[in-house]
Length: 323
Image (cartoon, rainbow, N blue to C red; front, side, top):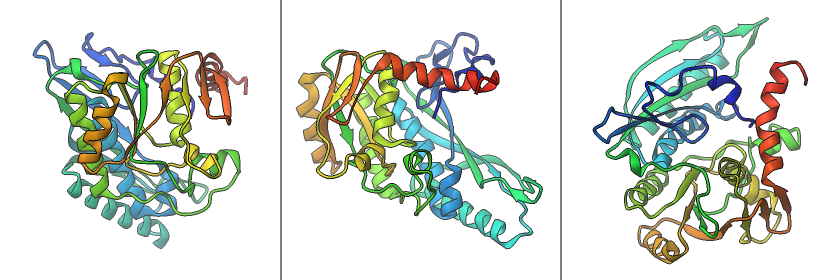
């Protein structure tokens, strides 16, 4: 969950000064010379999901890639897959391989996100122990005007924070379960591809209409990490005050799919909620951006500078041998 800046800053990520959005958000965005268009690219997979349920994990890799392109405002166009597995001569590995491909195929069909290229890497083992099944999905999308591009950073004090897709309800295979509780239990979140498409198409339409000021999809770490990402990227805090009844850790850390956090100007909030309702997309106001801390009801109040220091420092410290 740490920043990968230590890695990507070592490469040419500016691409002849045409990079409109550098790594660190939902997708990188590259301007197409001076004609106003842009290409968005990203790569996604969650190996622990694929290990727990190869079919759902394959679906999720495609859906998250599609969702990340959507979150920056791009129309997803095509996929290239990189299928990395262990020894296919072992029945359990071949089973992972087959079911992951079936999940990928279904998701690509439903989301109109065709595979145009790819490769396969098998027999990835060390001392007979296979790597986690890792069918990485690289996606590309296009936007007609790069100036409509969304980023994950909060923009203005007082912007309203809206949750698209509702609160999460389960913690199976989540980062919270693994890293905080030390367990790798349960099924991964189910990917409803019809809901995924409906919600993503709505988000993209609102971006094109200029109604959002920031967008970030919910994935690893759930709502709490999504909000932390947005705060770190902007240096601005937020106050979240609308969590559902019951244990707070479920809605904060659930990784249920097909969800986004968006922000908008206060005067646009009711319009956005009304249009979401008309489109059959769950949307609710959960807080406001502003201040110097991320406040999650009465559960946590963490200064943004502390969040950023923890996020940015771990990988350099690890690579230098300090950890």
